Length: 518
Image (spheres, rainbow, N blue to C red):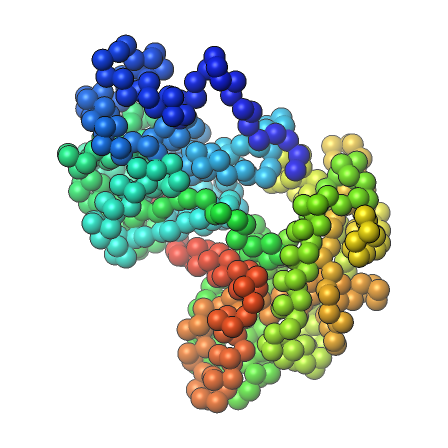
């Protein structure tokens, strides 16, 4: 990846605030406190020095040190959710995979724009569900709980757990009015917990407005247990942590195009109603009901993850990491094509040429789009995507370092008047393509990369099980449940499907929102 992700702090002479030594310094009650800690303590209200020291002794300020190291002020009045999330993503050392400014990869609240455009967030604010969606889309593990899905005792347990660790952090979504503060809906990270007094430390990212402050946990619960008028749902809290490994390698949901919300609603709500309204007799009939009436943006909803790199980075050779990732992607593709539902979708597509034509795209066209996105991401300018920047495209099989041939798509991109070469690595199917229609125009590439049949397969596998409850024909329901059940599919494919399900869940937590929290 382009750019730099942090520098190691030279120590000595410096002592990282969140390091074990830094924590020891803050715990020395009878010695003069270092200037930086005194500044933080004097900044907080409610005799924080005493509360802070007591909470340190209780062991429930461990998460504070990482959070305060990356604490920032929201850059816009409505960016409280974005700034809170940026603080936590940086505290968890999650690499954004794209540059912020110069060569630096770093989370800033202005970079979190995938689930809702920044222009809308700036005008309307953001809801609980969208913050959870943003966290997940940017590489974090998310557990989100509205107050009607949890209890104050569960909340306290999560607060204590995260305050006693650096491995997770809590975001609270609450109404300021309960604290007699001005404003309405707000997001803040919880920086610590005082057990004897049952207080939580709120690290308010609206630092131009209020400093960090301790509040009774019971009162914070009351502030969270309010209805957000934007969604009609209660507010709540979420636990943000790191994944031990990437949740997926081949497929992801795209929520950057304008029609994603309509597609998400169709898949999670409308499909269920259509199956109830129609007398579906067999699997092919079901596929027609589901896909022939789908929004046109369905073909943009599930994307396969391609790898783009500068040509001058590695030439035609593959690094060990690139080889390993391609092998895993190819295995996932192979597992998809061995499922029963994939075979049925292929047969259905053979009889539905009009549907097939609607999904057909050439590999060079896809590669042009991917390479443009790759160039923009490498330059830290993803939001300014311009598909007209791509020039010539070549699709060639490359045999590198004695491994089997891989598909390499190369081309030229002009960005800000500067031309550079960009390569795209394409996973290849390890099975002979059997009647794979709706593929791409190059005959020598058929079956070598994710096709329409693969995409439609993972869409069906990713739909929640209750989607099929509207099917009246008992035999068909049994047959379909066998085809789309993920219990017996290989673990790699299961991981991909569960990732898509989680993405779909977070996208639809609060789909209908006229306005939001700021």
